[in-house]
Image 1 (spheres, rainbow, N blue to C red):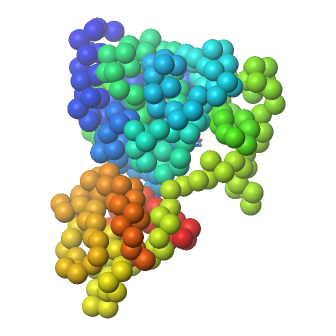
Image 2 (cartoon, rainbow, N blue to C red):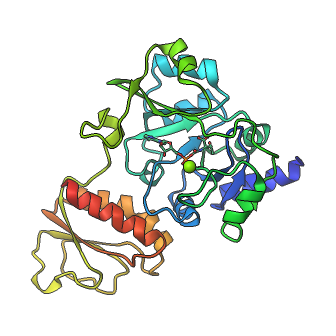
Length: 316
Ligand code: TXA
Ligand code: MG
């Protein structure tokens, strides 16, 4: 691939745009992992109704260390054995990785892809790239640019052609936590190969009553009680002084709330998604006794925002 095209893609990533690129597993839909607004656009393009955690692609183990809070001995061994390649390690995240990347989890999935185009893109753009598979929500992961084009045409800025993907299934996802090593998603590297390096992997049952390792389920939920109201129906007349408000676009914002966060003054759902986690955190730290959140329009990214609000309200 021409260097100019790769440079153009790297500049696009750095300026908050979306670039589909080949990896050895499937095509990824990439954005600057350090830019929450760019990452919000990924969810918009995929029409995901939820903020699922995204895999962050890095150029090498050194860059992986820059985004992981700890890099345990098992990570070291697995990186040595399988990176670059179809293995994702889930590790406690550093604060520079925005919450929207991890879907509010305290951990981050990291992978060093071995496809030469992915490698060169990562080297040129010098930021980690958050990238889920480049398909629409609920559809198959694309292994050719044709199927990326079918699903993403008009929604993203660039697609890098890299031929058919060699592996064709997604990476194996392994979580390394204080509670042990877990197989989170089977994929391109067989379980046996991983167990050959670090010993037996534990099972995760995402639907079971016992939810596996604490880290996996540790969504960021405000510790302050959160109530969700329909749009325009915040009971502002009776607003107690110790209530913080998470409002949609400011149309119904009270003047006297202790703390008010407006998700998007422009009533723009991508902007709202990008502000969501940070706004919840600020309200949580403001020392209010309760957070009253206004639902956002339930279309596009709004569905994911509302889902997050309801989940936060059920957890507190
Ligand atoms: O091969 C692949 O992994 C492709 C290419 C593009 O790299 N990417 C991919 O991403 O399949 P995606 O977003 O479609 O799948 C991400 C999955 C999540 O559904 C979850 O299973 C796991 O990776 N994951 C990511 N971060 C996680 C975290 N912090 N905790 C638990 N699971 C995580
Ligand atoms: Mg996927």
